[in-house]
Length: 280
Image 1 (cartoon, rainbow, N blue to C red):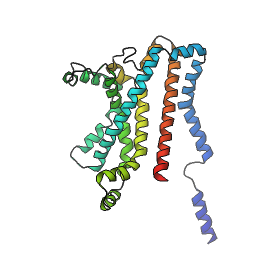
Image 2: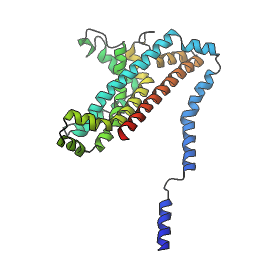
Image 3: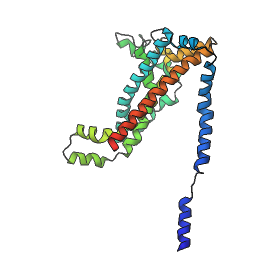
Image 4: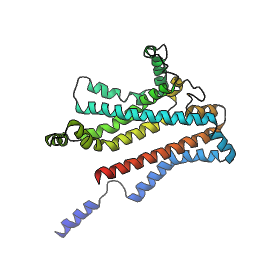
């Protein structure tokens, strides 16, 4: 009997993956080599500038206008993707119809399609003489609206693929129980389904937003790149690199990196508060 208990205790202590110290060490080493070291070089490269030069570079009117455009369009595109991405995920999970697998595969096309090709295709479609743009009395390409369309295109899969697993694991019996207790469809969605989807929707928004902030290939063609109007921050960085102004490029990159980190930290805080509100 004692031998059986000892063998059971040994089995419980058996860990498939090595202990915390070893795995944590490899984790930090990998993150340092892949993420922290490259990001630290941006800061190190900027240290060659004086504070006045750094401030003058990052507060230049052309750079400030690009910050507003990049962050604003990425935020709007993220919100659009949250709404339509959740709807697409709902249709793909809850309904059976011919061609569902094809549509499910089409969602991932922005992942596989080169961003430059996507930019050229969108510009062709939404140009004033394009297949879609010709039906509008206002310009879509070469405006902030065109940038939002491009960022929505590349960010949609992040929301769909984040929300899909949650919907798939969400039991229909809970909805049926809610309906049997007299709740309307709207009440069931708001009180039962939406609280379960909130974390996934916020995560999808964070991924789509952060992806849109650094997007270059699909935006550079449709934006028009007019300084102070439709010039995104990644384009300014690329322009400075082409002019061999590496220090100026890294200075602006630090602003984008810091802004992105603060916004994502705030989004994670909101997600944490929502989890506490709905699950505690």
